[in-house]
Length: 93
Image 1 (tube, rainbow, N blue to C red):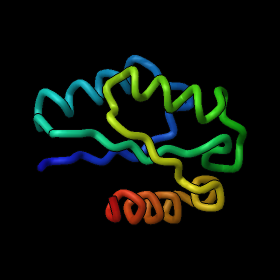
Image 2 (cartoon, rainbow, N blue to C red; image 1 turned 180 degrees about the vertical axis):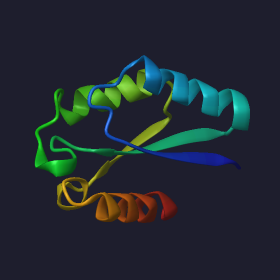
Image 3 (cartoon, rainbow, N blue to C red; image 1 turned 120 degrees about the vertical axis):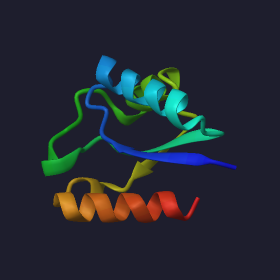
């Protein structure tokens, strides 16, 4: 089974994100796309434009099969911590 993991904020989800998910589907033909997404607070500790539920719904509507929340303590940290925690989260599923 081939699964592709995407690390994102989708703040907000837009046509570029939709293109990205569609391109993953066409180029890699995965069995699933899993997104690790920040919650109500994004990098730099800013509040997200839309809440995590609305953004997850947009991601699912755009082609993601599953969305996991990156815990706020990691999502609002430095880029290095954000990325490392996201990769670990995706690696254990």
